Length: 197
Length: 131
Image (cartoon, rainbow over all chains, first blue to last red; front, side, top):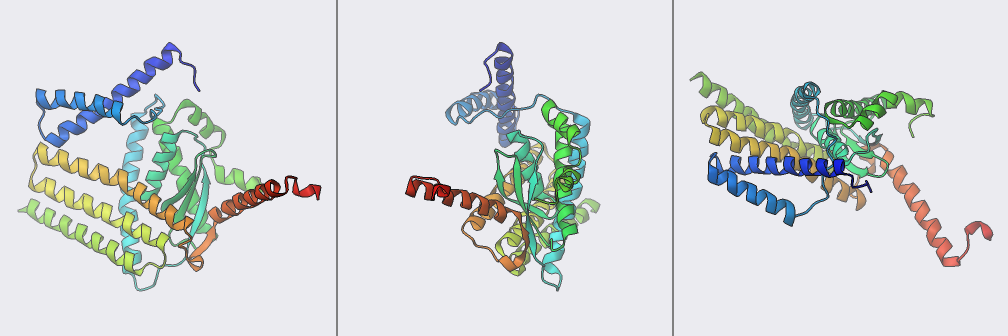
């Protein structure tokens, strides 16, 4: 697909090293001790694991904004608490939970990593779990709990786009950033194109 | 003493949230709603209990292990819910009455219509418009 220029190859090696680094960190954390032995066995194992269980390399964008990442992390923790309390309330309250909806969200990003992160986040925060995804079109299908009015559906969609925006600002590629700028409010855009599709 | 009290409260809250997940599994009306119950409250419950343990045993060894447990929960739960939700949807374990709107059904209908049209063309060897 992409031509194998030296720049590309260099970036791939860096990406591999990042992966190996995190595997070593994980290994050391599992052993609970930072010794020469645990680090060396960790490095050997990390290389073995990345070679034997070969997966298509995760394409990192090469961009990381720590400020936006911190904003995202704080927002995520807050939303996770709200989500848990909300679902807990739904299960304890006397009134049974109402009908939900399956909504489609057309993401602006086309990166596999970003799609996965958006889907993961959407599953852990209020209201939504991921049901299916259309990778080629960059579209996610989510089930929203207790969404029996059009306003609630719109709010849920807006939330998915907000997550995507936050994540793109934190670690999206320049292409994704540009897409975000072109299309800052997909809901308004889709309304112009003639209602919800 | 104060720390003990804080951990006790955190463990109690964690237990209540896990209970909420169990009650939700029983009370929610359909598979997709139940996935919400299994995905969310117990993650926070686990996090709270992990914090309580970290307060009681504040060593690097314990904290790093707890961090691994929590991060793997956060990474794997969405995958698990996705797999079950998707399988449930595709095998039509749905209660239509519990869905106000279903935008995935529209996509599935379109895909099925395309598939039928293709099969028909293959059977007759011609386009359906050719008569």
